[in-house]
Length: 290
Image (cartoon, rainbow, N blue to C red; front, side, top):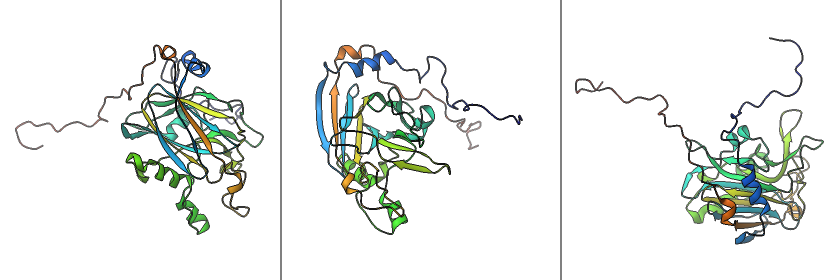
C-alpha cells in the first residue's frame, strides 16, 4: 500500500458504461425545459405552511414545485401510482447521482424495480454549487423530520412534522404511515461538518425559484411544507425556538407538454434482472421429497 499522500478525490463507486442507464437524452429533457409556451397547465395549487398534500402526475407530464413568498423547504415522497410498493429509493439515488440532485439527475425506485421515476428537467438553483460551509441544495443526505425523534430530543409532542404531514396527505389514497419513506428535501441546504455529522442551514431559495421534474411513469407524489420553514432557525439544540415566522407556502403546477416534444420517449421498464438470486427448486427424483 502506498504511503504517498493522495491527490484529488477518489472516483465515484457507481459508474455506468457509455450509453448506459445513467446516460440520458439531454436533448429531449432540455426541450421539455425550454418549450414552456406549448405546455398545458392541468393542475395548480398552493400547499399552506406546516401541512402536506398528495397529488397524481400522469406519465409524460411535468411537475414544478416553486417558492411563493420566499424560501421554504419541502419534503417530497414519490410512488408509482398503481403500485405503491415501488417508490423513491433515496439511498440508491445518492449513489447513482449524488447526495444533492439537480438538472438531468433522476430519482430511482427501490428493488426489485430499479428504474427512474423522475428526471429533473429544470432547477433555478442549479448554479448554487458548494457554499463556503460545504452546503449544497436539494438534499438526499437527510430525511424528513418526525414526531418520534422530536420526542426523543425534546420530550415534547408536535404533530406537524414532515412525516406527520405526509401521513395525513396520503391517507385519501389508501396509504399509511408505513408507506411514507425517505424524502428528497427540495430547496434544503445541507452538508456534513468536520465531525462528519449532518447539518442544515438557511435555504438560499428566493421568491420565484422552482424545481421541475418529468414523470417517467404514472406517479403519486406527496409534499410537506416543513414546519422549520427555511431552516434559518434551529429546530433542536440550545438555540432552538419555534420557527413559525420563517414558514411559507409552496406552489405546485402540473403541465402536459406538447406531444411533439415527447417524440421518441418511452416509459422506462423495471430492472431487467431476471434471476432468482441463485435459489433453485427442489429436485424430485423418485417421487419422494428430497
